[in-house]
Length: 531
Image 1 (cartoon, rainbow, N blue to C red):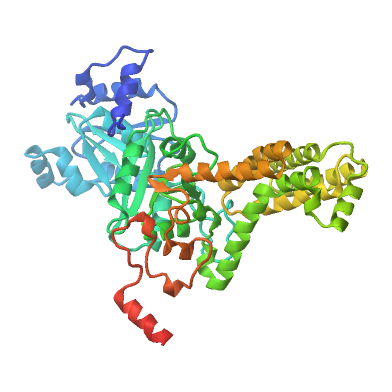
Image 2: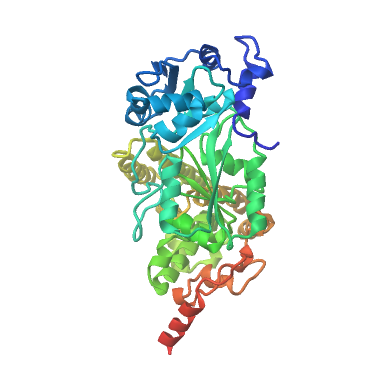
């Protein structure tokens, strides 16, 4: 179902009301009687206390009745006083103006000669007036005319631009998205000052009417990917969109997987860099998290800082993250396999140390592994829900105290505490929160398979894990690209990161319209330097 156009949702709400009789279709048109229009507005809005009705008369000689309507808390009252009321109330219309008004339309005259507001719209539909009112605009109605003004006066309280909390910035811009959509689009515009940047807006939510924008660079982004994103967003039919996560769940390719197929971020620089690569971004009013699509598995282990430092440092950090992901996924299962099934695989001295540490433990290795891993997950989740000043402290102190007490009570071995702590630290090295959670959850099935079949169960689980990843797609792009299908050029920016001055082309798997990153002049200058 395609999302309805502007005002359509209000019409559905009007027609579905149970407290009052349904309005006929002809009543959706504005009336020339101002009192009738006001009664209709009050009837639809429900006589809400935050809706302000301000009656007045135009000028000091005309005496024509008029009214402005706005919702307190969504508007800038200074703008209303200085740019709307002041010109209409104290304007002294001359004799020539009055003669002109007698021969012309008052609506057109006010638009061209009186109103000082920077943005306005003349409408003749009741639904349009209500939609503007709910968006924070001010409505102006004049007695005797079947048209009204929707005047831009948005001015609700908003959070300032701050450093993103979910993505730590080591080197790079420290501004992050806010809950205000236009602030977020401006942050992207500051980074991409090019007329090809497209920001297409629409509204989602049958009741919430949430503003959403799709961003891409025309001439770079693949038009088929752009159209696919637009089509999926247009097909959303839901009462309300409270956060970008709603849209992510509704437009992703596979709903039955733990792995994210869309990247969410609070960083404008990350959105801008992905737009320049040919991807599409989606921003939602009311949340600081933007969505980036399509993606592959490697992007979740990358960070913008990889490109701000030299390529040797960036490559080392990426390799460290890939190793951390492997450790977070397999270390508990490897511990179970080695201790319970394959002790002959480890050196004799280490095997004796393991046996000595577990000598007084009454539980098998897989029981203590499950208990300690689940307890660590519980501590981590509990520390996240506590207030910021005490959350990290409680998490660290709780882990130390419980781990020490468990070892002293011979419930678990010291080696199991080391394994769980190493696994937890490794999961923290993964930049993307959703990917880290996926790995944390998948390690439990791997531990179960290992507890039953030993190392063979671990390998079997990893095979199924790889097959599942190979079956995933993100807007038609295979999830394991550029590893499978293999693309040699794209591997240069997957696990390793080649020097920035050698990254001549955008990712091939995105099939961008313009593959070249650097202009011919830039290439010539670089070649001259390398000689």
